[in-house]
Length: 410
Ligand code: GLN
Image (cartoon, rainbow, N blue to C red; front, side, top):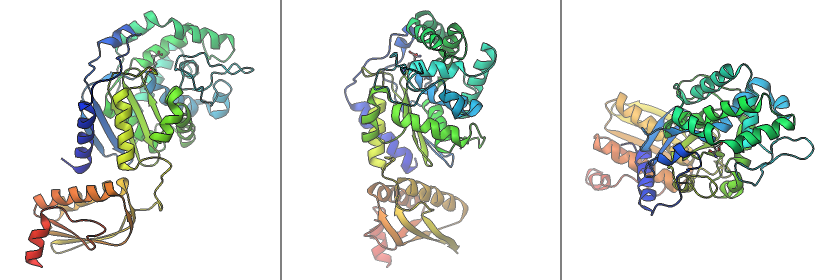
């Protein structure tokens, strides 16, 4: 197992061991049947590398995690000026199903509470069928595979969704809804009932991280301006009335759903998807939030601790006979170490190496997580008969077990 995957597996294990908290959503009756124990996390880099841990094969309904992606589609279709006539940008500080309409304009506060999401859905053009097809194909393009509707969950929500229909009629009465309330909410219920896995959500998030190009399929989904607006609204409103504290503690634009999923984005770097059905009183996955918070802390992913210098950590790489000479520079954080780890694995698979000389002279800072990942990569390589030898063991420790062998040879 590669070091990033094993870090994710260990992290999930720690949180799975905590006593279960929260309650599986039951206000949509069909959601109550979800497996409360299911727990998964996936991470996808903008290079399209997928790391998975836990129950990644288990699918669940996307629910509100669909909102930022549909918002991005409508922004891409209509542009910011037109969309902003219908939906605002302010955190409501209120629960997801609140009646947050701006006095004067009648616009819902933002696109990530239900009122704003229903309006966003209503703005996708065409007959109801065409509009839903655009949404399903758009979300499928974000995920890189065809997503299907869970008919049971759709029917269950359609039967019980009077509050959402009320929000539809209210926004219609304010003149901001794009079609009839009945049609808009019906399309919205279908959109919420699309089934995804944690990996789908992570790829969708990584497409936002990669400024609208799916990093796995390499296909463009939405333009950069749509992504920028979507990420801004996710950063300020994505976790409803918990959005401020989320930004402080986790520091990643995110969106939760009552199916137990959460998407989180580190712009320019990676997307994360987590899944665990039990929710807190605000409708956010309890374990999902805890796992994302720890991931952000341990891997140093908070948006407002950006790396000092943005450039490749590899300044030179050459092979001489059975040795790889790799020179690194700048700050080694999680993202840098993940890239270096993959480069080393690729080189080890391509050349018959026995050693890697890691020149760390120009490395300025080594984050603990980067040192840990490089050591784990060192252990992996050692198992394949390749020694990873840092030029300065104070900066980057050598993998355990290799030093003894080393001193006898030196
Ligand atoms: N379909 C759900 C609703 O509209 C989505 C809510 C959510 O996931 N927060 O009530």
